[in-house]
Image: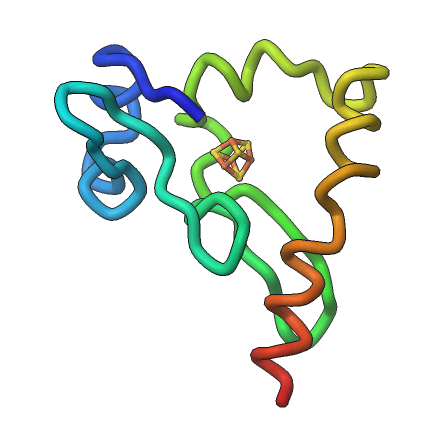
Length: 89
Ligand code: SF4
């Protein structure tokens, strides 16, 4: 996902860890098939955004529980769960 200059500023101290660059374009860094800001709690299986208050605008534009949000979850839910399974192995 694209990260704008304003998004980068808002991410503050986390920006360098969470953003990767392709030329002059910035994107959320991916780890194990999901956004690096997504935390997968091994003990509970809970998923949450570790930068929710500072998340990029593209994430803010996707309203929680909207049809678009649910479609994204349906399409991509297994990615962090696969990462969780790998962590538990
Ligand atoms: S809401 Fe958080 S975890 Fe989800 S894509 Fe955006 S920054 Fe990553």
